[in-house]
Image 1 (cartoon, one colour):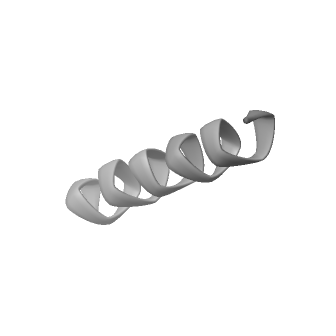
Image 2: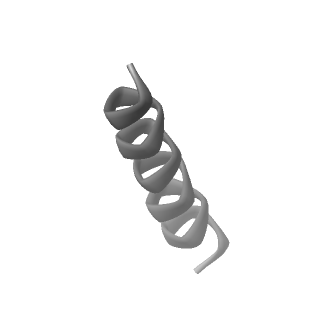
Image 3: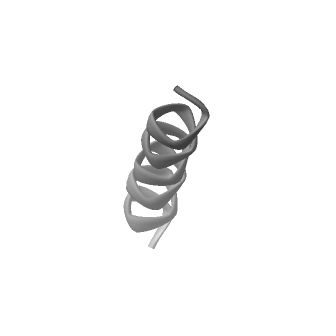
Length: 21
């Protein structure tokens, strides 16, 4: 459960960065 949340958070951060750039 925690691992999934952590993975999702990283994925969201990566997508946000890509979107900003």
